[in-house]
Image 1: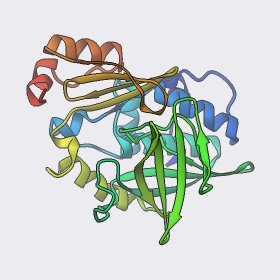
Image 2: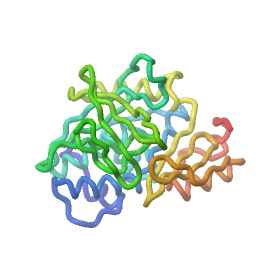
Image 3: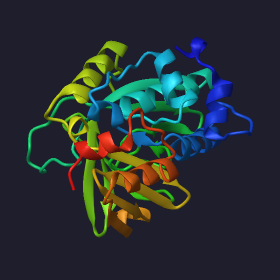
Amino acid sequence: MASEFQLDKYLARIGHRGPVAADLATLKAIKLAHLDAIPFEGLDPLLRRTVKLDLASLQAKLVEQSRGGYCFEQNALFRAALEKIGFKIIPLAARVRWMSPPDSPLGPRTHMLLKVDLAEGTYLADVGFGACLLDAPLQLKTDIEQTTAMGTYRLTQADGLYALSARRGEAWRAMYVFDLHPQLQADYELGNWFTSTSPFVPFTSRLIMERLSGERRYKLVDRLFSTEARDGEVIAERALRSAGELSEVVRDTFKVTPPVAAEEIFGRIGG
C-alpha cells in the first residue's frame, strides 16, 4: 500500500510543510493537520454512492478533491501516509458504542483505527471517529485519564476488550470497544460495505459531518449545525433552514465540495 502512496500530495493537502519522521512529534502534527484539512463526512452513503477503499480512489477523493470521508476512508488514507513515512502500523477494528445503551449487546466491527508502535511507546491513532474526532494520539494504557486540547479520554480493559470513553461533563461516554487482533483489507471491505449500505446504520439516512480546527469542533447532523469546545461543551447551535444555508456551511466550515447540488442533499435530511 505505502509504495503507491503520493506522500508529497498528501502533505500539501493537509498543509504540513515541516520535516517528517517516524516519531511521536510527527504523528501528533500530521494527525492534527489531517483533521483540520480533511473533514469527516458521510455524503456518499447518504447519496447511495459506492464508498471505495482502494488507495487510488482514496487519494483521488480525499487528497485531490475537496472531499472528506468516513472512518474506513480516513484511517486507510492516514495509514498509508504513516507507513510511507516509516511508522510501524497494526490496523485494528472496533465495535461502536457511542449511541448504544450500556447493557446492549455488542454490534459488528464497523470502525477502523490504528495501533502505532513508537520508541516512546504504543499509541492509538484514529482520524475517523465521526461522533467525537480524537485530536491527538492516545497511549495504549488503561485506567488513566488522557487529556488533549479538545477532550479527556480513558481506556479500560475487561473480558479481553479495550474500551475507549470520552468525558462529557461530569460523566464518561463510551466510544467503542476493540481488541488488538490485526485486520485484513477484506475485513475492512466487509465492514465498509455494511456501514455504507445498511439501513440499520446512520450514514445511509443521516448527514453527518465533523471537523476539528484550532480549539473548536464543528458538527453537522442533518440540519443541526453546532460548535463545541473541549469535552463536548456546546457553545453555539442552530438549525439550517434552507439548501442555501447548508451549502454555505458545508463549503465554508467543512471545506467540502459536495458531489451533488445542496438542494438534493437538503431534501434527503430531516430537521
